[in-house]
Length: 375
Image 1: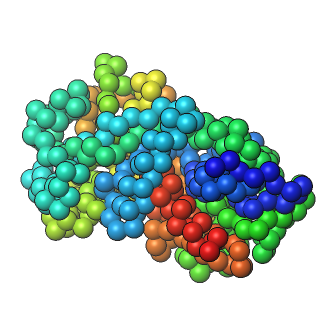
Image 2: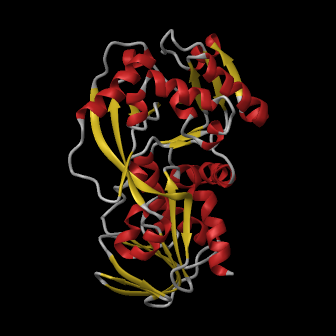
Image 3: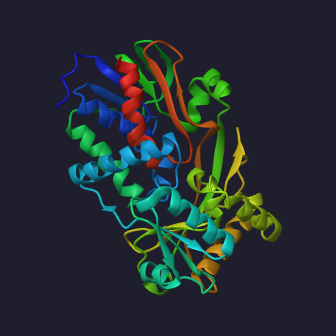
């Protein structure tokens, strides 16, 4: 259904934030025939939505996040066709190097059935052309997807604009209330408002952020050249992922993985490393990542943390060193729960994925938020 032409200065839905969470709500609203304006302080999306792995990592989730991820998968595939961006259905390989990691994957496969395919060493190498001899098996998660966020997010915005969504870039929200968003370029009136500004909710609605325990999770991430220019079709997770993602973490043997890592690799747990990588369409690998939590982070990065990521990725790939192409900080909202959905005023919802899985879940979360908001 095409969106209605809005009256001058008034829309059905105003969305603050043009990252993946805001865009997911805009897509859902357009599908429902609503008139929409999207406001963003920058001239394009430059935050967490374009600084990530592009990994729709749904299988490793649990509970509502898994439900949202499964729903989001179908929307990603549909939007790739409509908006014309690349999407890979090659899934994820979880590489296992120890007996306890194999035990986690066996338990996970027993619980999830066809969502998890166990692999022996040869099976892993049939999907990953270069990994260390330490990798003795693993699992393939066929439902997971990959996109290139640097392409997909702008493509989504362009498609929405072509459907009649009014994007107002370089426009900062200064206040929100029922029926209105006050901005640096005047007031926008709307029947409903969604605030999707991620970790910056404390700038606009500090009471909401304080009640939810919102902090900023700071990541160190890198892009490196691929050894021998090999092609990695799936995304790649490791044993460190087993103590981070809720679906894997719920397996009984994950406790043993945690204990072993604490004894053998406390430096990796100290920086909360999730050793993983994806390959960009141009061939380079996006590797990472580490996690640090604070309301306000200092401006200085610790090179030793990046060295740990490089060392562990090189070890996983069985190479001596990696050539860095780019380095960056990722920042996303972290809170006491995986998702923040709050109602500071009637007709207003604050929405943030507060667990680092916005790309995975936003398209599944948005319909539930709008169902409630429009009820």
